[in-house]
Amino acid sequence: MADYESGLPIRTEADGTDERVHVKIVDGTNPSVNQTTVDNDKNLHVELHGDDEGNTDRVVALSEKGNVALDGVQDVSTNTNPSSSALIAHDRNGISTNRTHQDKRVTAILGETNTVCLDIALHDESGQNYDANNPLPVALEESEGNEINDFQVSASVAKNTIVNHDYVVTAGKTLVGDQIWASASGKIKVEVQVETGVGTGIYNSAFVAFNSTANPNIEIPVLKRLKVIAGVNVRIVIKNLDNQPQDVYSTLTAIEK
Image (cartoon, rainbow, N blue to C red; front, side, top):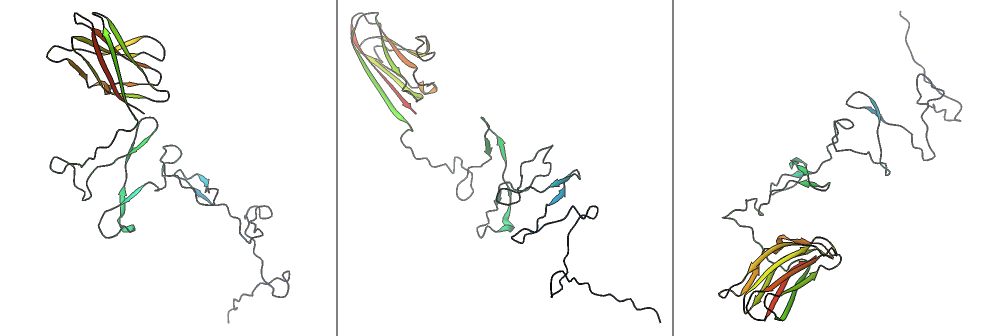
């Protein structure tokens, strides 16, 4: 009969009476040097490796908490196959938001001053577009910032004489104009000027208006297109075009924020 191929168990006497076998995980090329270790907490120390998209060996990175560090930002050189860790939206099905409905990728675009802007579509709670038949409800509130209502009266301004109504923007604020109002019983010319910088004393004209006998009041409602920085002077220049002295009145209405 043929020889019987049998196997014998292995054992060691180095561990005492129970004769347990000690196994070392080593490098086959240099086993005496490259060995895994177990620390005092009985944790096996293992360094995880893997191949990247170009089959280059890479070490798996961990965070300070021991979590696997995921990089979801695609880079053509260093991260061509990013982790799918981007913002994922759930399909609105009216029943649940479990994983089977987690199938909507959110898109974005680079904005100004190093911002990233998510793409959104504004709809009502039923998902309907806002349009002429489904208008967006709007509630009006007070303006953000400090409301400025700067009034000046100049008494007995002589014929062909100019008076200035100056307003210096408060420190740390930006003025957003709303309107200029000027009035007189006779004819006047009103010019709105803005200083070119803090304390320069040089002005650029922004608006000019005249009143008339039929319309003695001057309203300039488009000043909100101007934004004036802190410390800069806004000047309302009023010239008496009537044939005798008269009182002139002016008001600057704006928001500082």
